Length: 159
Length: 134
Image (tube, one colour):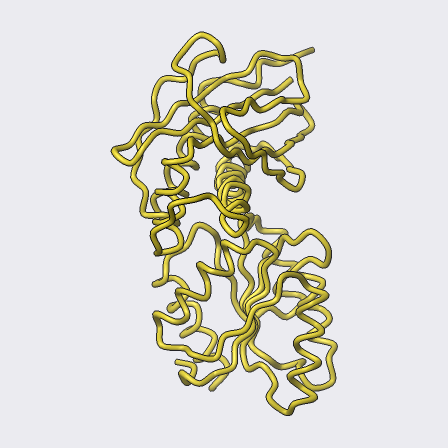
């Protein structure tokens, strides 16, 4: 039997984990918007994304943390305590590291609800106006985040 | 608290997290802070420091690294002839009970769960120092 795993509580757990991670690690305060299926809501010019494969006994899929250039530079400036104006090699792994931390926070909350979930080593996608290609053909859900220092998105696809 | 001239090794395969940890240590007043980008290179750095007779007095390592994990690195340090007693702070993004138990069994001194602030690092170091000094 296939269970609908992308339910509201699952999405909320990842959204809360992202907010906590960015606020604590990067002093970056944001708010989460209403999730929407990819292609049916606001679009974003992604410059860098961290992507991670996740598995559990109930599902498998992937999660991408996507940033426009300006937002990512603001997030990294908050995390590393210096002003950055370009995404160089040293900054790139920040997208993957933040996704690692978000996953760790979410995993803890999911474990409290009796769900175990594991992840693979994250990868980084860089470019201008990139589109993350997820391994699954299942619908992609987008969680938008907004802040005065720029927006970002989390893409989730589980099957 | 550890003396400010404590020789410290940070081990993390993510450059950004090494910067975060180093920045926190420098802000706390530590000055002698080295970095290694994985467990293998950390062991090379540890051996070199021992040969120079200036061994690291504190190791701060990430748990999840692509090649040698923080746990495997910790086990190698605890089996090391000279370094077996060095305070070892583990930093981890995933702190489930089984993982914590595994780290304690392997001899970790303390651990920090990400995300963390500079104050958390300070608190954990103070806790280690109290145990270490007693």
